[in-house]
Image (tube, rainbow, N blue to C red):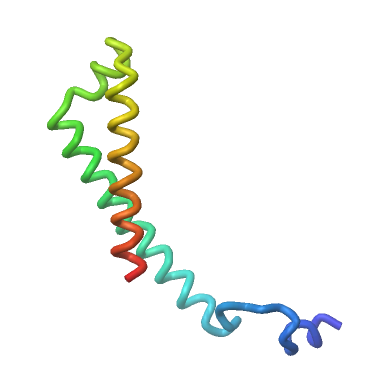
Length: 84
């Protein structure tokens, strides 16, 4: 029964089973690269602005929103660059 399901086109796999390992390894590499780039961008922002002091001690909500928006923007740029 399961062999009929996997051999037929009932399940619309994007990747064939025999190519799955290669795709998973490539995906993990791109995830790692994306996380490293994101961490570098956050480090640069941390050097430019005193994020921790302003948000935690001074309760600056506006800066928290701006930094969050910048992080989302950087994440979208990194995702677009990785996706090609």
